[in-house]
Image 1 (cartoon, rainbow, N blue to C red):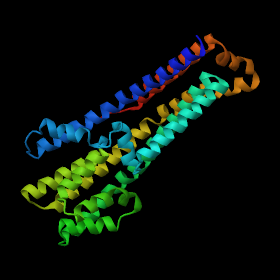
Image 2 (spheres, one colour; image 1 turned 60 degrees about the vertical axis):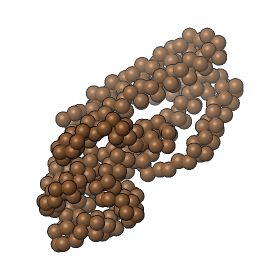
Image 3 (cartoon, rainbow, N blue to C red; image 1 turned 30 degrees about the horizontal axis):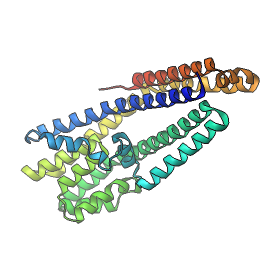
Image 4 (cartoon, rainbow, N blue to C red; image 1 turned 90 degrees about the horizontal axis):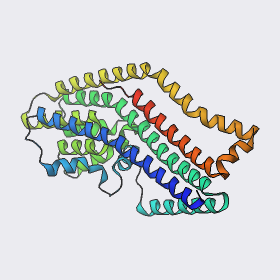
Amino acid sequence: MNGSGFLLLGVASLFFLAGIGFLASGGQRRRNQQMQDRLEELQGLSTPSPVSLSRNRFVASERGGPQFLELWLARADIALRPQIVLAAGCALLAVASILTLLAGPIVGCVIAAIVLGGGIFGLRLLAARRLAAFINGLPFFLDALRQLLTIGNSMQQALLTTAENSGPEMQRYLNPLIRRINNGAPIPESIRWLADRLKVPELYMLAAAVETNFRFGGRMSTVLANLVQILRDGARVGRELRSATAEIRFSAIVLGLMPFAAAVMIGITKPSYIMFFIETAQGHRLALIALGLQAAGLLVMSRIMRLEF
């Protein structure tokens, strides 16, 4: 296999891995949509129309980008301009092309994949960290909201006051909600908008509770107290699940890093072994097979660690 054929094969492999990522993220989106539909049924609302379902399902892709990337950007509270994305893509393509001409196609493809994968992984890690801080603070936010409602504040006054007194990890997501309410948007629709933007089940539960209260009335403080208890019980179960999967996660990290550590050690002690994978066609094929098996192993380990209850 010549250099051009190997380069095309490497690009095709990257697209294949990207497709696997799209399929993996689709399952989570479907589960969130099913939870939203069940909450709407519990409220006694009519069955959503296909137009509304399509709008809710693709609300995170209003700017035309991939849905999982738009969701991670929203959760990380990062706004990317199209000009910046285009400039970064052109720069990455230029660097990969230069490395392909200087060091060969395998080096160019590997460096491009590392940079692109590292950026996406960093974005996902940042989004998960910020969203986890928001979810952890949500029970305290709702409890403070309940206390203000108990002493006689209206829902809008209590919501604005509680948001102003929240920490930065909460205000990061609540500020757009407060701006919509200040500009005249109804509170239930604003909370539903935030839930659709972040795809967080806890926010869907809050939106369902607020919509039900605005429609049928009742003591919102009692509903919030029950919701806070549910969220705290869910957080406790989540901690138990993480403890139960700690050994599997550690094993996955060790098994994932071991091949790369072995490659570095072999490259230091016997550089000729590594050059076999860089300079020969057979080495190119074996390197691609090894990377494919490594990616398949990571997917299998991630599926094993995913517990549903």
